[in-house]
Amino acid sequence: MERYAKVGMQELDQRLAKIVEAARKQPVSVYRYGAPWVWIVSQDDWQSALKEVSSCIPPGHSLVMLKPRVEELLAAHAQELADLARRNAMSIAPHTLMHLLLLQLLYSVPSEKQLYEQLNYNLLFRWFVGLELKSRVWSFNLFSHDLNALLACQQATRLLQSIVNEVCNAGLAQMPEFSLNLAQLHSWLARHAGHGGADNHS
Image 1 (cartoon, one colour):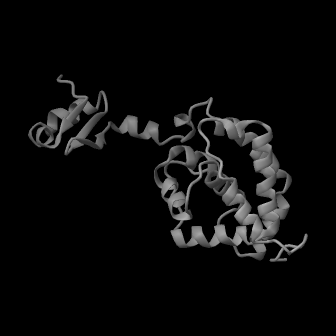
Image 2 (image 1 turned 30 degrees about the horizontal axis):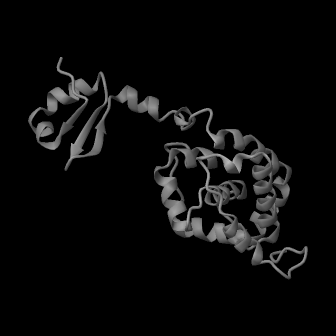
Image 3 (image 1 turned 90 degrees about the horizontal axis):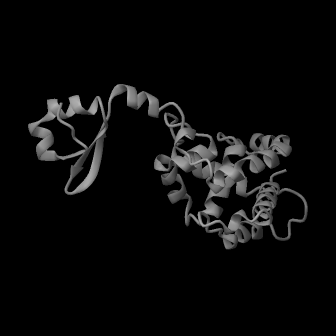
């Protein structure tokens, strides 16, 4: 059997049957205009790839080391977050929203639109917020509404600040994978300046 690691569009047209047969043994990359375009993979390889996002995540990545502590901190405030979600009619779990906001800070994602786009193709981001490969991402309108509803809650921004402080104390913020945007965090906190200890959505 002929082996193909990558092929162009013209070759794909000419030798489709042979290339598909080769892809049953090994994935084949199809190039278009000199750049990778699609992969042809066997059913077994595809089903295996769909099993878990976690299988694609490097075990020594800083987010992997960070996530257990984040989960612990959020679990300690689970009821508080659930109350915020109920009062603000959030459709996305606040636990998930907190993970999203933390990603935006850790990677200096400049806008919620770009954060949303990352969820559609960044496996590391999907894993961190709890989305599997086959999970559909929410509509952008819902995503934006719930993120902003959470940021409008002083309790949530203070909890986010405490998580970031944990990250800094653990030295994870200095890891090369991260580019922590403290200015963004301060801008979120500044929305609640003068509100004292009361949540503005209580």
